Amino acid sequence: MNKKRALFHWSGGKDSAMALQRVIQNPEYSVERLLTTINESQNRVTMHGVRRDMIQKQAEQIGLPLSILSLPDSPEMDSYNRAMYNRMSELGKEGFTHAIFGDIYLEDLRDYRVNQMQKSGFRAVFSIWNEKPAELIQQFISEGFRAVAVCTSAEKLDKSFCGREIDESFIEDLPDEVDVCGENGEFHTFVYDGPIFKNPAPFKKGEIHYREYDSPGQPGETSGFWFCDLLAD
Image: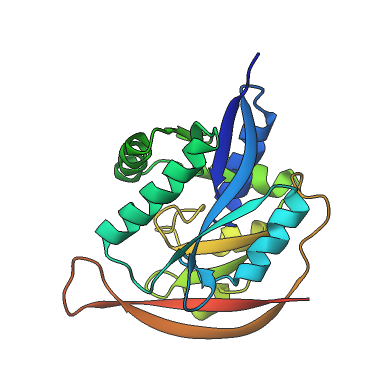
């Protein structure tokens, strides 16, 4: 059987890790590349501020090549879509046909990804779609994955959650209104070990700092986040 050549849209977090594990175990696909978006001025992942070299360390231990899509600070949606379209079109010319994502249940985000991938000739695949978050996070922990919270929403979680290990106590301490997988952006993680890793990705924790950003679609309003900086060890 000819396997479908796939690339994985890699965030570096726990949902990505679980979704990547699932698709690697699926004989239908051949996952051959990781793709991550980076803020070109800060040299950090656009979503949660993890340094580029830490994402590269993950890729090395996973054993997959890493492609970087560099973006300016706070790009307009049109420019983001255009940059992603151009990169995906380039990868399509290399023979890739499928793009894998780690989303769980946000329908509008899934529809957006499907539409954007179709424009560049790709089929979007969601390997952990509609799984129950409570079961998914328990599988993550029981299967030996290890991660730390690197970004937390200040509106949902206090500073103490940022930098914590994702374990049973972390999950138990989450407020009731927070999704246990952080699917609504309550927290983001960095995975440093697990079944898909040859060896742990070494790091040490740096400073925890607070930042505010303009709230999308809400002029004059801001949202605050705590960030835990991770440094190469």
